[in-house]
Length: 135
Image (cartoon, rainbow, N blue to C red; front, side):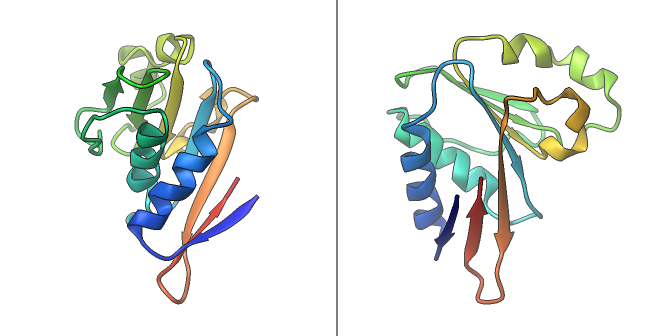
């Protein structure tokens, strides 16, 4: 599937529609350049799950949990990790086995650790500064 989002609000709306089809245990692997809208997409996932949380980027904390929606949302950011063993230190596999939705920004940094069933979402900035969202 492909969608075009004109701005951050539209990116969140696409994600809110997208999450309606997800089930407990699903993993959303997000890739895109800096500023492409990965965190905005996760904001839409949280909103679509019914969470009232203020979603922020977990770039420095690595993981944020949003438990108040119809399913818990585990938001991870692998941008600052430099070695695969750091995934073990943060309990990466434990999060993937929890009964919620995992959304992983920069999932392409460690593709060998992303389960085969993951839904890969690519966000690309177009020439007109829109976001092309593909999954």
